[in-house]
Image (tube, rainbow over all chains, first blue to last red; front, side):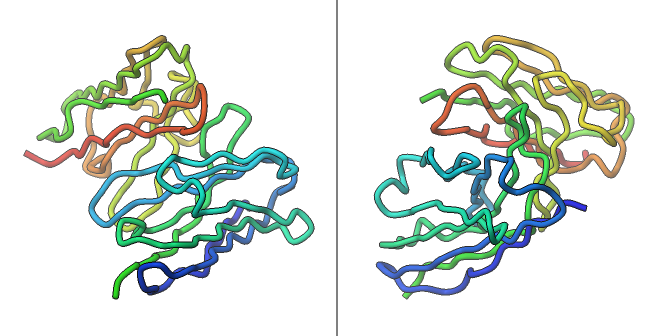
Length: 118
Length: 108
């Protein structure tokens, strides 16, 4: 059974940093692109970043470029999102998702809440 | 960047209705589009990919159509468990793999 479990969310002050993790199981992690998607409270879905199977390609939404870094450790079946210089508008539930060959996101984690507030 | 526009944003529906949600993109994306259903407190669920291919396990009352810049999600004979918010997502080019704004279904 495919499982994605996010962790690392919490309350952080503006300007602070946080590292999210996504533990994957039930599939060959190194064979899939992986993505982060976020959802601010009461708002819609926003694609944040994705990373190729071997980590050689990474892409970001403009609003997080230079502040967030996506990475993966295929030996540990884990996906990460390092978030620096956090802003109030980064407050959201962050989901990790597996990207299928079709490009769609078939499997999602349960999400982890990041709150940026003083 | 490819812009994705959904309409309507809210839809008041009754059980048994046929419901249609439209997604328009600012550039031709072929059939690189997916539809998701999200219920409060839950992660999104993939319904349709490649514009019209039903994900395994999704009821056949859900269907997708369209190509290029205009796409439609149709729900026939709406059931109570279909009350949710629906999102489209363009998958042709990134960054970003943008989502539409979402369409929230509410019971009339």
